[in-house]
Length: 239
Image (tube, rainbow, N blue to C red; front, side, top):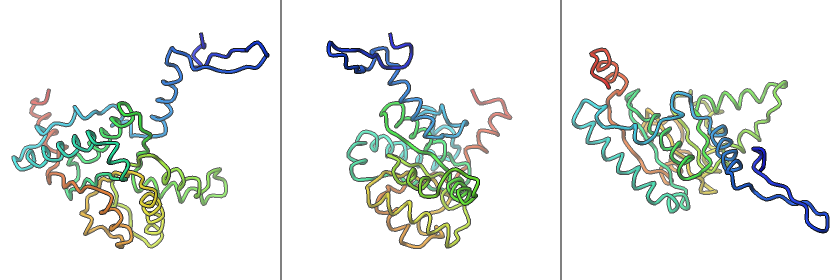
């Protein structure tokens, strides 16, 4: 009846036109598609789910135990999602080992929040954030720094991937302080993945103290999932 627009228009006896959401669900689908576009989850991870996360991808027994504990934290977090959102609590996933699965889990959580819980999520690497801010300085760019920062600050849930991989200059510190501080003040949920413990991040405590207060800390296994899977695939043992 709505021709795919999601709205049905009526005119009452006085000639006034009004709209009613169509029962076909087109409007809900449009909203969901907009949320997915806004999220900007990398193509590699756009379909990954929490069910895809398996401790069997780790070879070391201690890695399996560590990942099980993280999985329990994530399950608890989602079970009490509204309370955690109310308090502006996110999770800081870190491991000094590259390829340990941090980004994949963060993306899986983002997809879960969008598809199951209908939340609005923004996903970006720290390097992309800084690059996009720099791009606004180009006079030919139609975007402004204030608009970009506003999108990052006001997003219901923000996922910053690979935090700390960027060069920690004074300028970068100020930009991230703006983002972290405003989200802190407004109790906005932020998830992070990083190769650094909060103690070793090359930013001052204006940033790290706020992150520590508003994030559960999850130390990922110090083992590369990518390397293990590659070895298994080379042996033809991955199904």
